[in-house]
Length: 87
Image (cartoon, rainbow, N blue to C red):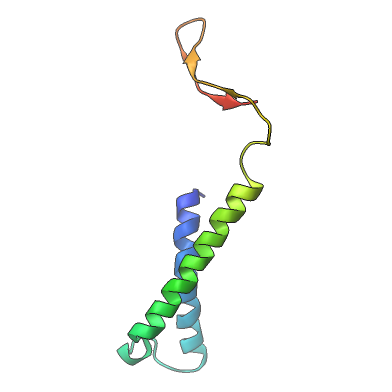
């Protein structure tokens, strides 16, 4: 699963949770009265906070080890492109 898709799903999670909450409390989630501007703003802020937290987590726990040396992309012996990498 690509990281972009994960970020989109994390942003949409509060909206889905609110819709499930409305369904569980036997309210109609399709009614516009339940999706007021302040509710949407709060859900949007919660979604943004989830995305920011996941970006921090990906940056902290993912990627290359600290102190690695970068080898830039170059042409190999037979003319093929060898991609850059961190060793």
